[in-house]
Picture 1 (cartoon, rainbow, N blue to C red):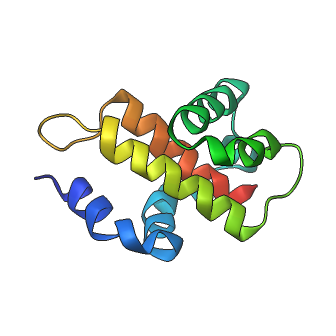
Picture 2: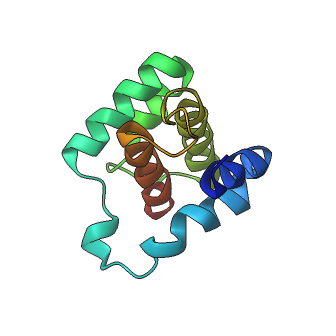
Length: 112
């Protein structure tokens, strides 16, 4: 199992602090424009939430329109992390393209 998967699984129950720290490792060094979600990212976020956790659809619709509360951001990150663990990993435990996209969105949500 890769180091990356161990970190995701180890911190799965502690999403509030640990996963954000892991995802944020490189994001903190990016210009603010690179921390924003693109329209494609926002569409992907909404599709994932509507399919995997429809009760959060109204929160996902707010991303980029209004400032989210920490609880709202955390709920979205947890739903995306569940999706990452379900569909975002290759058989060897490394993230696939979908997993990398989910991880990027999880990291960027802290700026909303």
